[in-house]
Image (tube, one colour):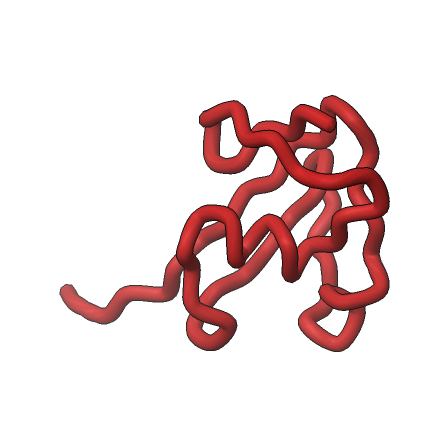
Length: 66
C-alpha cells in the first residue's frame, strides 16, 4: 500500500504500523514525534497503530538551539 511519509511516497505492506514507517525512512525511534493524518500518535502506540493506504505520516525530530 502507498503511504506518504514527510511528503514522500513510500510502499509498505498491508497492516504496516508507525514503526514500519519509521524503519522505511531510516528514522530513529528516539528523539522524534509522529503524527498520522494530523493526529499525534503516542510513542507507546507506535507498534499497534496500523496505517491505511493513503495515510500521511509526519516524523518530526527534536532539535536544540537558539
